[in-house]
Length: 412
Image (cartoon, rainbow, N blue to C red; front, top):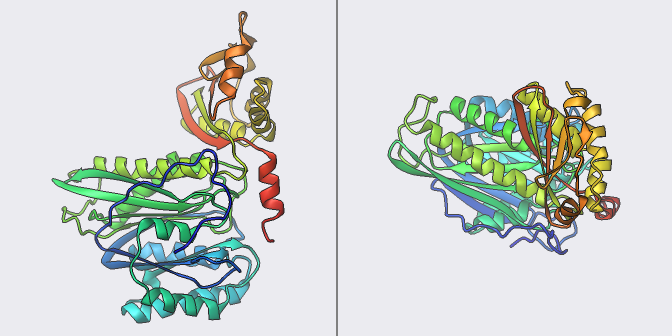
């Protein structure tokens, strides 16, 4: 089937999980040949009739036609298929790009006997090149005729600069039924929180009304995908979609008063968190996975923004890449965040070791355990603002020369 990239996996890579099929979801892949590579690059997912859909999309104003159409399609709340193209983002391509998407929608709709609006399309890859209609048509034809595949094949196929396949699953008891949630995602660069941060797809056999599915996904996104950053850049194509086939047989979830609604929402958030962290672990050139925990902020939103200011700081990220316990760079990042902060109440720690407390260096601060912590792959940075009860956790990676190499050579 497909491969992700013919390069070494990230040192932070996680093994692909053993994910069961989700009833009502059929996966197929094919080779459209969007780039000169010997791999599958088109994923087709057929969804049973009545499948509910919810989505979050990039706020990038130079977004692709796929995103523009998806925003409108998701309002109807129903889906019959998903097509994902890898190697060409089809963004900044005007009417030709939109025509290519509509061609795919019409082609799949004719095959399934559904409305074109029930066919969702995503594309990822180089910006500014219209999706070739001939390759797209041939690729879709091949996918429609292909044998069903597994989650790993589908995940490999949606990748671009990813170095390992990313999947996650969870289960929940809903109305006495065990429901399954399986998610796949691609993303390793051009990652920053802005409603969604990559191409991610979550599938469940739970019966969920579209409005409640949207509410659950939006809340999960705010606490997961919108709390990660690799490089502060938001893609033109970022999309996360959740599909619920209803095949588990539970009484449809309509709100948090429904039996098992809390369990379902928690499972969805769990899958989103797993996927979000996997994207950071595959950050381009990443050698370290960084967790930034902010407490004592004026509000949760303020804590999140402070956390992102730290996580997006090139000075902080390069210091951690160099295993330099330079906590002054964290002070700088807090101060530039534009959020309430007071230098005289600020405290900073690495790996549980406080370097500064209440605006002053710790009197008996020993840098040795901090330096030892920074030699590891999983780095913890804690910041307490000492102002209120707001808190947030943000995940990022270090910034290395590998990031420059990957992005300088991206189009070639």
